[in-house]
Length: 316
Image 1 (cartoon, rainbow, N blue to C red):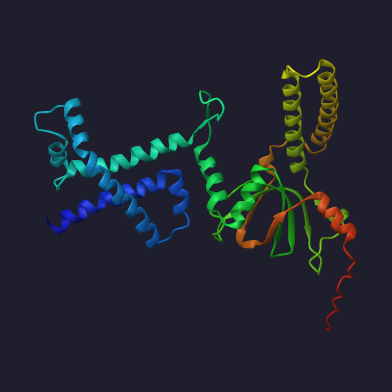
Image 2 (image 1 turned 45 degrees about the vertical axis):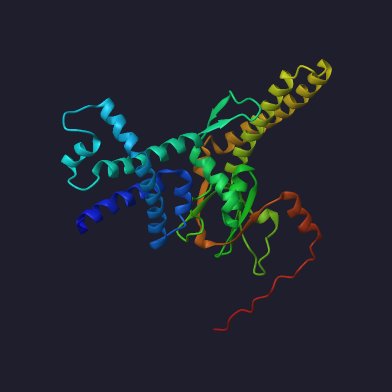
């Protein structure tokens, strides 16, 4: 076997490994942390695996293709050799094809969710989003885990920048590679402020308010109330009087929320929430944590008063 033939045999193995790595959701996420040689050997290992699988199943593939598509000049290997004049061309083509088929089939399985109690009910979901959420919770770094929890549980975060600016709001989207300086996070901002000279937050009346997050929060609350009303009405075992009382109470809350939302929309106009999103590079972030209104109020009321440091004026 010549050197050129060896190179032509190795190349499809690498191609099949890279294709599977880029297409299959878990390997795409994991390979995002690899650079240079690590990514090469990761893909090469997967390619070798598919090469071994092809060696085992290729006789079956060759027989099936010859039975389905019989031609006068022989099975798959002979046909492929007329196009690619190398050793084992049919097996090399099958190796690349298998990597594509496996990647797409496994992705399809990740897009399907079964109900644990009712297996006949199948729900279609975003396989990529589910994979990100699952893998970040299992092997993600602390920043990724904090962000994904903030997204899934709709928790507010405090993002402190190196410039002294602070943003408080909801994380809109988790970046695929937040550990890289060029990555970013998208925050639906509710408040913005500047830290004082001692690093403390200023008084509440000095915060800038962004109504976009409040609009989104009210709309989400309306959806929750509507779902609760529908679920209560669907209950069969509950007493009619109790159901009526609960539904009346929730509908009253729903009306109050609807009035607040309408008033806010009249003041600022109806804008999609994407227009209120602020993109923040992770390289500019000094710290990030969850924001709880109750804890913040308690801290402000119980923390000892600290006098601001006086900065002497410079003499000309």
